[in-house]
Length: 288
Image (cartoon, rainbow, N blue to C red):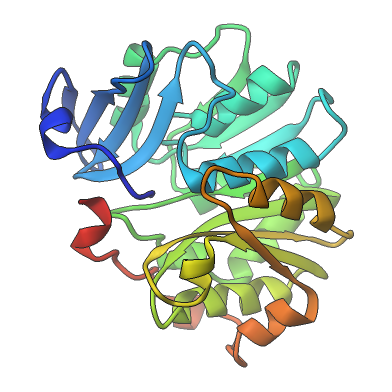
């Protein structure tokens, strides 16, 4: 889920509209890029894909996840990646373009959405991308122990992350699937007073030794609803380079880590399955 800069009139012109399991999917052509499209579900922007340049990431949070992908291993080295949430497969395409011979598993529950994306935005036939149309946690459970270098969680249903993907038990499954020292990265959406975000940081801190958070400063200050990228590992993260890249984005992001990040939680408790709730719904103004 991301903020949209596309006008309502443009969204209605030349779009591919189809009912999928999660609502009404709309593929909208990008007026500035010849073979690029934005995917919206029930009006909420989900993905942007440029078929001519899969290394191009339009959404702010996806660029930040792209930085994590870039820094997860030396340049060009293939990765084993699990994507929880597929959308238009933007990040899977990004990995395949930048790290040939990578092996990727995408878990996208919406089978009809997968069919639409495969038909209208076809994947490179040489990409090693397997898609499972099951629940994200169920699909993660089918990943072999220690298989993944990187697990990326970007799951939204009705613009909200489901409750069962926000808990310590869920992160236990993430840790099981990761190789020792592997990286977990999640797109977390929240707004003032940032209760959900603080709880997600505390939850990750209960399961991983190293954390970082990348977000727009106005989101971190609780001034607006937006996306934050939470990064976790048991090995030190590339904080300096992540900070440099986030600061150089068209919409600069700030990186918090260490004691300052733990202080940011304000004493929030880790979230367990028994108490987990879905992330908050964004206000309608986010998509205007």
